[in-house]
Length: 210
Length: 255
Image: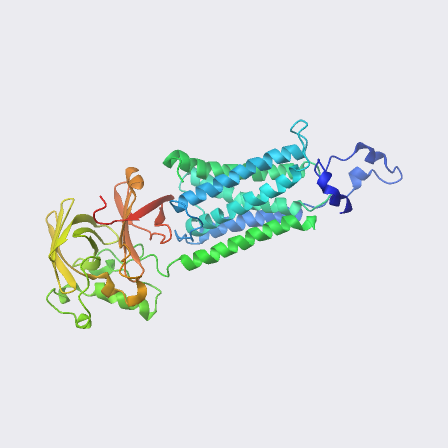
């Protein structure tokens, strides 16, 4: 943990690519990079899958009430969700950019605050999605009237599962370098998919309105 | 500490969701499916929303009035329970019943009136017109409704095409059990209709908010009448076949 306390000056993710010299560190023991135990992703993946399935089952079995509490003062409940979802998508893009920056994929642009920006934009994006998901699940349920609603339902459930997996995987040290980008990418893709099948669909169908 | 923050993020999301779920559960009225779950179509009074699963006396009471068979409540019959109370203002919501069991709601304001008749399954009529000097004159598409207000009940008949039904209605105030339900003299709207945007898309919907808190309504979907799911009282919207319909109150003089 100690090295992470100096995180304020860190410009690359804490799971930076393993230094090549590490292999040469100790010839007496088996090659560490091969033998060092990777932390298991079993629990995060299982919990995430459980969340996905649980949301889907709940949305499917629970009778949609058509009713949920109003969350903000917009012209209609739909626009509330549409805008919350758009906000989440906006922060998701920040997520992508800050992640690219953390991993040094934005050229030389890798400011020290990229990590904070990534964490906080993620938190905000996640919290923005929660009221939307509650309304979806409680009032509408898992729907398959058409391709859009089916894709939206599936992606919505998957998003929260993938996010859970990401959160549970984050604290694990020594994950393979591809793990977090892959999970994070899945979360991002799911959220953008949800956004496209809801907010963007709404704006293109009913027009741009508050 | 760093190790914990992702878990805290998850936890805060869960807590937020739990709070919203609780609030949503409380926002839902106890009985919200009057139309969708009503009995067989043939039964005449079946359109009257039977609040299933509600044993509370407070909800059973206001239901009595509209459930009264129309034949037993002729306009001339002074209602004993209302003898002592002052005659309610004409300018408010009138809720009643047709002899075929359909529910009628008339909203009167400044002499103008809007009415909606619907049985929650297969029949609906929109009417508008005037209420002056105790005379109700409403017209709709291929429909005409006329009646008189005497004391605190309104009665008359509605003619649709070649069919004719008698109706009786009472002021919503009287049908509401507790007099303190309403804030001041402002009556909340009783009739809701799908917004113009929704109707432009070829979908229509009408709802009557009954005094006992239940609703009855009909949605026209692809030209077919189907029982309307109840409107969310917070948003005045509901979901039909995956499409959210938003409704707005029908107020006389607004169009």
